[in-house]
Length: 275
Image 1 (tube, rainbow, N blue to C red):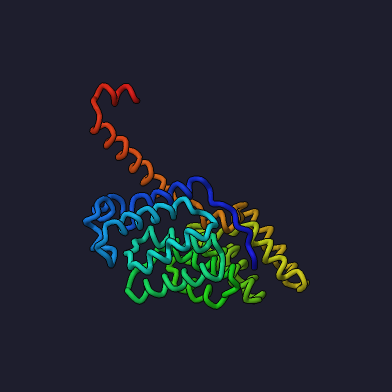
Image 2: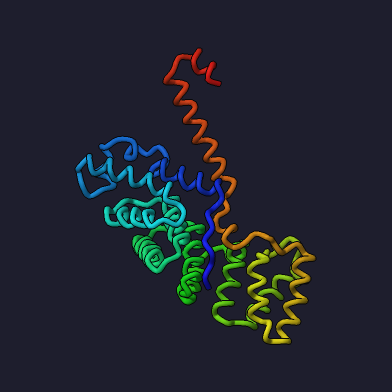
């Protein structure tokens, strides 16, 4: 299933850029501020090479979305044995998802497998991008395998990825069963109800349209979902690229720290005049 690539929202780009600009090792990491950190993350002591690499690392942020340069930087980071943190994995998988090519799928798969071998726990958001990329590349078995390892399958993104996996697997009856369970009125009102993207539901309808019995059941369930407020107009791509509030809060803190550092480096009168 080919999905048209659209640039992520400005807030997503700002967040992804902040992760890279703050450094792979984490915001404020000493190894990202001075050349002495070279031995910790790179396999070389050449300071010139480290500076050049840092510049390329920053270039990742400005390569989003859709340029091959971002992928090349990721490959170099991997070859240089750069230590990835959780935010870097999300950024890396997001780049691979946006590029949506066999090469980016291979890079994403390799990064994920090596992380698991090392015993690292990948962020859920990174796994979302990995599943979506696998689906876009028609690798439904791989998508299902990654999806099975996500710990919170009831999230809105998981609910829609689950439908997409069943769509590509031609599991029509299971698709209807998922929607039936989601609209089950006997479930306690305190249990969080699944929400589905209008875009994904349209794909479900397109899949069952040639089976009259399933189509009739789907139309009935579709009506219930709307009545229950379980349908969102956001596309799956928009849900994947949505920036969580806690990340926006981190951006505010980073900006405040930058302002604070500027204040301390200039006379008080000049600082007040600037404000």
